[in-house]
Length: 196
Image 1 (spheres, one colour):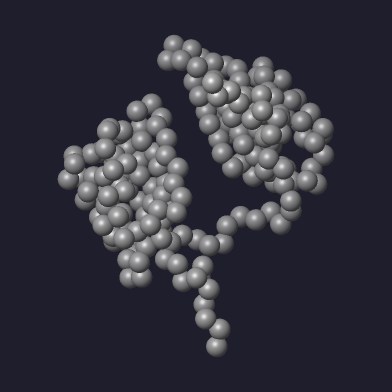
Image 2 (tube, helix red, strand yellow):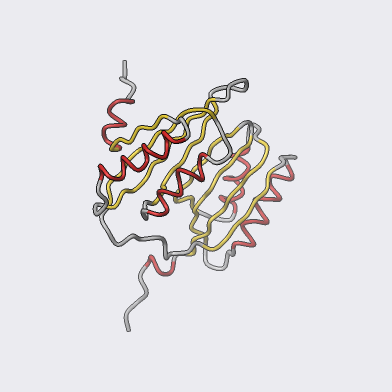
């Protein structure tokens, strides 16, 4: 009888932590995970207007559940009087797969902020089966109404690049927004900061 693969028996848990930022938050989270012998495989963390937001994917020992992890991380934050919310869930191995080769593109949109910008632009991606892999929305200043959106997308090879570009440009022009669509390699080459 074949043995199960290592991938099949790994107990992976996804943890998200959101709330008011302060020094020591990352230590409070990671020290609690270390006590449970959870290994951090991947994580992403950012600060938005003073709000801490993170997602961790960890491998936990057999018998450690998502409820266990949520409890110990929450208690560690509470003990340090940190105002954050913790959620944990089992890692789902079946993720979105288009089944088609894709190319990474960066779509940058800028102009006057309005409630429907992200929904309007993302509707085109959804209709064309283009997956958004990362998205940043930035206000240029507290007193400014100018915003910048940066979409990192996986563009299926079957999509006509010129037609897709024209579709996005037409939508942006209709609401007085500027837009650029670049292959990720070109975008990174243009924005790369030289090491001195």
